[in-house]
Length: 463
Image (cartoon, rainbow, N blue to C red; front, side):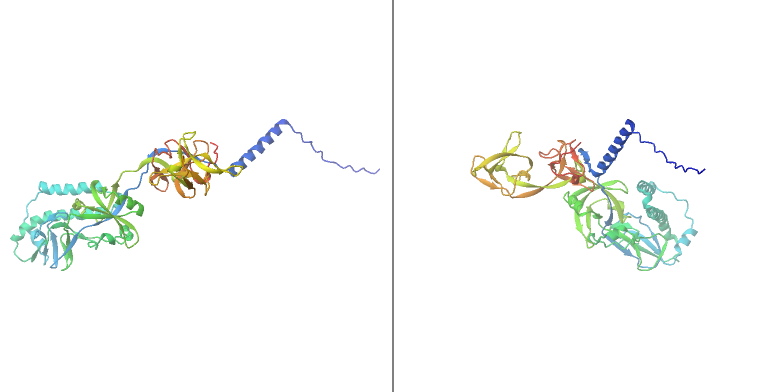
């Protein structure tokens, strides 16, 4: 008996749709559409106008320029100083002595000098130096510690050398000592850096960076050859500081004539006369000239200062919200004040259906009034080039053609992009300070479009 072939077919379970699956499908489709529309739609972000000011960076590093004269040794030997750095000396005052043989220290050490104590004046010198250094110390400028070390060491040597000077007359004469006197009155400094003849117009960005700057400090009891620099004299209390600035910022500061300056080294404040410079390297610099306090910075070639200027205060808005817009200019006499909405109107020529020439009164929105030219800025969407306007109660006409541009933002208080003119007082890369309470401008707490490029004129905005 033959076997019968049996073919087994897989049973397909019928799709049973229920209300739950339908609802889930609808929701899933809705989510997909919303996501797609989200990425296809450019959203308009609003910004609320607030009062404020811009915190500008007013700290600068500048180079000190003084009247400096380098004094050179006239004999070789060991130099011992008797005037403290920063001390004012008169003409023919003793500044240092030169021990040609080198025996002076040995002979003095062999003598009984007795106990020595510091006077109140000498102690005050030490206190003043230490307090000034501690007050101005900055970890970022640790190199200044060496200047303090040299200054303190010279003060110690000077006080010791005063006693040594009184004992020289008791020596046996085996040492050859030359006395060096100041050729002119001035303030003594025991260092040189090659910038003693620097002029304000010679300052460059590379110089202010200080990468190749070298300062040579002189110490007492050092061996020097004839003709070596021994010290220098600052002969004038007038001095200046040259700082780098941006051209626009420098022009603003120059208008002030004098600026209050705070020196970060010791928090001393003084008024500097302002002069704007454009030097050979093409950069802009500000020269601040002073008539006092030079002695406080006799050991410094570079200083950090803070310019104490009043910050502009007004309405603070993002720079991204600022836009330029073009308008027609209409003379004042062709604008009719007091329309139906207490606005302005114009009387424009029109042609009726039968071809006759007539006139119509059209309400306009004014965005600015120039009090100098006596002209209104009117939206170009209302008028066309070549339109003829009539003066009220007169046959005089004006043809619309003249245009000008205003700077402003898009106000969104009314639900659409409404241009408002602004007057910028000051701005940086991120924010601008604009004049508050202008007739056609912004008010505090207004909402404006954050990114002006995201909207067009009179565009409706969903808030």
